[in-house]
Length: 452
Image 1 (cartoon, rainbow, N blue to C red):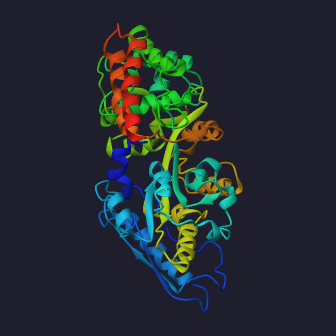
Image 2 (image 1 turned 120 degrees about the horizontal axis):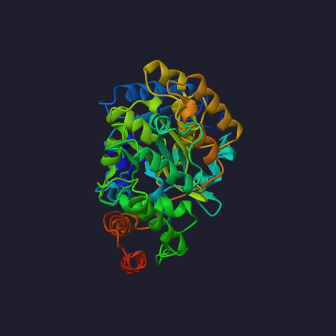
Image 3 (image 1 turned 90 degrees about the vertical axis):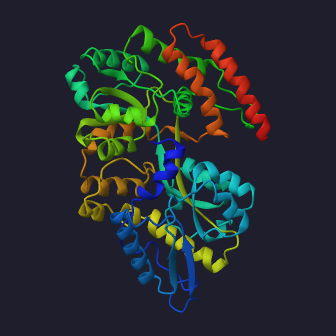
């Protein structure tokens, strides 16, 4: 789980692709079928040349797809990052976007409302696993009953913890906390291990504090904004509980350490250094800690967010240029089914990922939940696992029934505003939570009013 700005920079580097055969068989009236008309589609977010394994996997998939559908050609585009916020809207508005373009969940509804994506409802009836997609995932790409895109990844938020520290503190790493009271107790025991040990870490600067405020707020059943998106809704009992919880751990339990005003990289470094017990995050945090911050997969676990009623989530997928011809839309849907939605193929070809030395076993992406395709993907993931799957079972089991909630409108502006109360309760013992929330609400309402 990375802040949205960091996701933009890393998106092309985390593509999980692999080779295989196609999804559903091509009907005679589809592009690529025997006697069908030739068509070329441009597809965004090909991994850059610097990511050699992901790039080769993508290219192999393109070759396999084109062999299955000989009249379809894929024109891969590897612009990095996959989304450049400085040019994204201009490309959409100017009609220069790829036929099949990459999007974050948070942009989808704006794109639909602006008429910048094709309605693909008539073309997805042949996608055999469409009915099995998690409703909260497919709904991201829907407006009413119409479908405007298909997902690639999906993540939800949980509790990342250091299993090694749990053992040292006399805690059972196979039975992680399920309530915030249990988090408090575990954090105190980990902090008591000695100097430098922090039981629970939290962000409070660089918009990351407000980001995690939203994650905790959603977990408690609160809302960031009103249903119409025109006013703040976080000055609530749930919002107050988020700050009170942190204030207690910081000043009463003394389990959060004295170093505060932390941003994304700070907690990653602390977790990789083996001194941080717990933090809010998605399973990809463990991959980042392992790859970039000298951690080891076997030392970490992930469980569901304590007492969660909902989870801050997100992900990405693809939409289709509204100027695309019906033939191009049909070809695009075939490619997306092949590459993003088929167990054992495309991004879910875990056998090849294992052969290439890439990590296999983290419970991401979760597109299907507990449906047959979802079970098949889990089985394949476990059969080819290179990381300890059992360490992440509490997350997979506990998060399955938790509703995925997306970021609020004007997310970055709201996160910046909420950095203030987050930093205040972690740096000032006398912080007035009611006043902090009231001030933040007033500022947020101005931001939301200006955008409505």
